[in-house]
Length: 273
Image 1 (cartoon, rainbow, N blue to C red):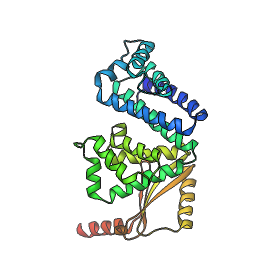
Image 2 (image 1 turned 135 degrees about the horizontal axis):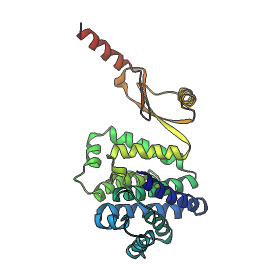
Image 3 (image 1 turned 120 degrees about the vertical axis):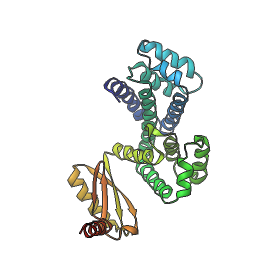
Image 4 (image 1 turned 45 degrees about the horizontal axis):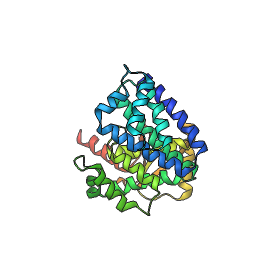
C-alpha cells in the first residue's frame, strides 16, 4: 500500500480494534465474515470499487454511496467499519480491496483471540497447508483458478466442518479467493504469519528429516527467539528426503543446513573437476 492508503487502513484498523475489545467474540466473527463478503463484492464489481475510492468525491459522499449499496445487507458494525475505510483516501482501487480484505481477516483473528482460540486457529491453518502440500490432487483442486471459489470453498467445508474452528474455515476461504493477490499456498502462509503477529510472535518454518521431541522444539524456538529478539512460533514439517540436518525460514531469511544440500554441493563441486 502507498502512504495515503496505509493511513486510511490504519484509521479503520484502529476503529476495528476498539470494536473487538468490547464486542462478543461471536459478533466479531460475524462482522469478519461480512467484511470479507464485501471484499468479495469489491473484487467482482470493478466499477463500485472505483467509485468508492474515487479521489474526486468527498469521503462522506463515498461513505454514503457505500451505505446505499449495503444497507440491510450487512450488519451495522461492518457497515460502520467499512464507512471509515472508504471515507479515507486510497491511492488505487485495488488498495481499497486490499484494505477490506485485511480488515475482515483481522476481525476473524480478533474474534479467535477474544475467544482464547488464536493459537489453535494459527495451528489449524498451518496444518491444513501441510495436508494440501502433501496431496497433489487436493492442491490442484484448491488452487485451480478456473474453478469457482464457491466450488473450492465447498470442498474445504466438506474436509474441515467439525474438524476445524469456523474462523479457520472462513480464513481458508479468504485464501481461496486470493487474499492480497496471492496464490492459495502463499495466502495460507500469510494468514499463519498474521495470526502469529497478533500473538506478538514471528513464524519460523522448520523442515527436519525426523520429528523433534518437545524439548528439542522448545530449545529451537528459544534459540530463534534470542536471534530475532522476539518470541518465535516454530512450524515444523517432517521431510525424510532431506536426509538430516534442518532448513529454517524466518521471513526472507533462509538457513539450509540439510544433508541433502551438502550432498548436492559436493556433487556439483566434483562435476566441475
